[in-house]
Image 1 (cartoon, rainbow, N blue to C red):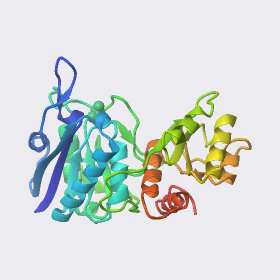
Image 2: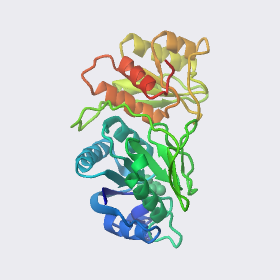
Image 3: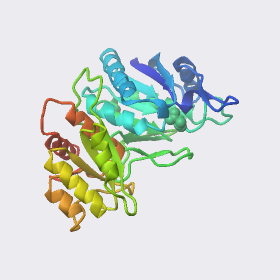
Image 4: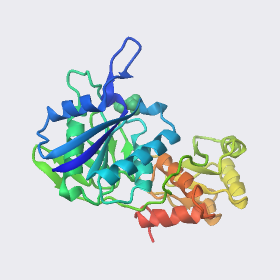
Length: 329
Ligand SMILES: NC(=O)C[C@H](N)C(=O)O
């Protein structure tokens, strides 16, 4: 008998409609009951535990760090951990968990696009798949994954890529780690692994994401630092370019020893320093090109690196990106 801990945090999977909009109104035991009605979960002993009951757009970094601590404790007591979570920030929660989790126990996040009281909900099937994956021998050692719409996706690189469709998540450029459906549980890929976050971390330094758009000036970069950001992530154009004003502002930051990570606003593909006046200048000045990580995951990587005792956060990020195969060696 496999023993799993199910941690309920809220999200659409646990909401019911009200006159004022959807609200979280189902606990982990109710979610488990609905999942058991979809697939036979005989042989899996699930212990439901309620953590927060919030929609994930209302969560802060400290909420996710509390989830990291709860998962650490649950993983020490069980063969695997399943988390129900809102989808809006699920990719960030999954990423922070991946930065923290080092053990062999599968840690699987899931959620839903439709509420608990929908006449055709997707949550019960997603949760049933997450539980089956977490209990499967093939899942041991796969780290943190996301179970959604019959796919098991790696936490590192996963993105919410559709607003309302049932297949809400994708990991562009990466293959699924597994599939769970009527044909059974199949492991088909790997999930990179490289813990970085120190146990017991309860807060992270401020890192801001700066978007690029036609004619963006330097004010967002300058303001981020003025507000206390210890590093910035640029959601750059295309393969990593920035407006001349943003490039200059980033070069000033790098000269002052403030780390700058470059990502792309496109949603898919890796960034690199190709263009004079843009990405090539940033690369020459020491900006870290964060492979194919989304701006949101790169922000958490830099914040986690800045929270360690290592004083060279940029080098730490680059090493981590190489270890997980997001950046070439
Ligand atoms: N589908 C969802 O779960 C979206 C919801 N707003 C949340 O993130 O909590």
